[in-house]
Image (cartoon, rainbow, N blue to C red; front, side):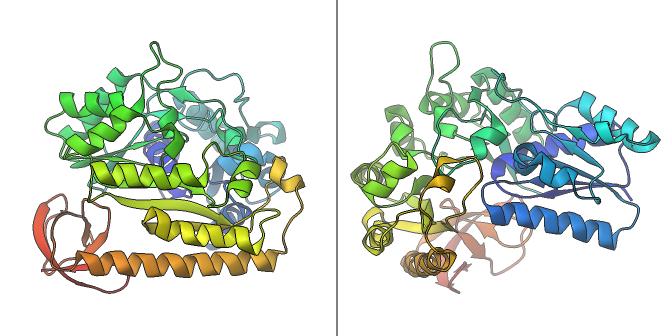
Length: 419
């Protein structure tokens, strides 16, 4: 059996997985499964552990390596699993030397004290660009431009799994994006833990908007540039102007909003208010009228009242959100929110269900509004996606990577239907 990577969590993990595969295969690692874990919720950790047990059960003799944020933040949890042969921290998982060491340890017998290789992230001050030629089987490619986070939202464990904010210099990012375009990728997605913090640690403190302009200026052959999750309070004026003026910057923003009630936002230690979020969406849509928004929202945060929750429900309409990622609050050990008065688990799940229903209604409304509109669809292996990142069912097969001009004729509640 060759090497397999099971990926959980964010687009940043997806970007890193390509580099992990390259380095692990170059090191000669075989008959192994790498579980690239996520720690954003307790459910994400549970899913990683479940995947590890399933792999060991279904593939006797396979070596299991666990890495990612959950391995970084909960090493004892995974080290105690008999199915796990090796743990790699987040800073090591893209290192050639770490994979060579791992392969040797697994091939020649790993001692108990060698099982865990977890990094001290606090001292990290820079991040390396993960150079890859492409993402196998995908027309869309990811470029990690930033890692880590300097903020301490009270619910979030990720800074402990990723370390402080570090930015990749713009020249390296342009070179990597060019490499991906030359290998056939039609769309590039910029990713990071705190993407809008890009540049704060670089000379001159450039902002994300300047990076976007630089990429588009130097790569006229890049057809689509897309951004992953953004903190609305950090979005700079040049990025807004780029949205207004750059047709190749896709009109879809996914916002880290988390809640729609000011007191809950304060207790989360978020840096924006409800009014900030609504005003941002209105101004961005004024500059780019076809802009579509998605958002992360948490239901059942400690001390959340029914009235506070209704403020999150109404934020969907007030901001005009079309895509929701909804999470019932999950207390993460070591975070301040875990020490706050908790709501019953059933309340958090029930509110998350209501918020998801609201999101489904918003999505159907958006899909219905697309009927009759012309759209440009980037064809993938199964269907494609519009400029607004909406899934499309095509009327006939087309080669992946093709950009087709279509007319939207309907929807099935989740995807658009094109003719």
